[in-house]
Length: 327
Image (cartoon, rainbow, N blue to C red; front, side, top):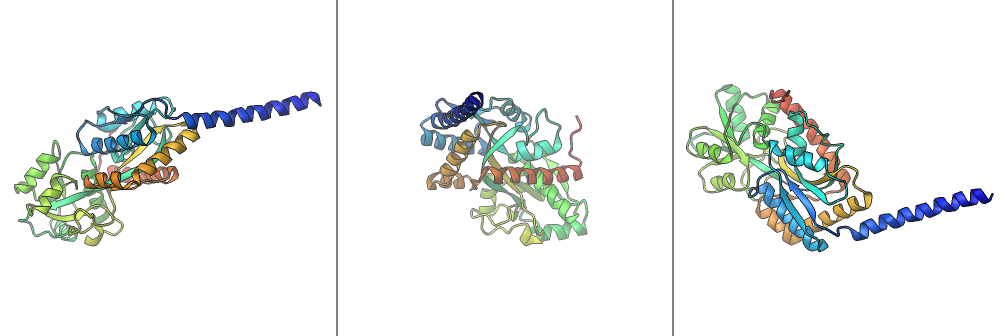
């Protein structure tokens, strides 16, 4: 009986130590700088969004959150670095439609983009903008579809390059409607935009903020459709693809915050709560929306489910478009 009592007491003591340890982890975290990895070069819209979030979290916790740009391989360099990091909450990353949607659908990677990560919260999303030269007769996506069906293979569109969100948003349109329009890849968004403005190509697609939005607002281009399910408040005059007859169409370039898999539950909970709090603040929301990002904080479970749905969607699109890389 004495031995049994000792075992029970030891188990209770271990449980109490475990609870106390978990509470200590939560209360002490963060007590040193947090690294926020961004798999893209400084200065772009993705990088800017990460810096807004980093600054807000630093202010909330009184601990520095440092942006660490690790560009390369379409975001895969920074993504692998995060997957291999210690799951202690001091390495997190800005995960995107590229790193956790399109790239895993196209390539065999040295990590599992679902199992090797903790998904903390979605940050937000921005639609793509489908644009036409004013010399064309297109006013909406329905006009483009009708012309393409009557003239298969005779219509072309430009984008920033093969496999990026703008390009694949039109590949999804092709898949859903059966139209045949030719992709003209450029080395970046700026030359694609310049050529459609100059009339060298009839159509182009790009992320809504910046040049595309400015070109449509100034009348240099016609906005035939935004790729999101709802009209963008920054371009309320531009109809959605669904309004052009493509029921159920919805594509946005999205952002979120991830960490390595195996993150202790107290830290996972604290990170999610912190992100939801700062993303819900009017100041940060206004800054993000000025950049064309619709702020969308989420629960951990909502974010994981969203990434899984995105994975299946882009697997189908890249397969049909013949964009799966076998190497």
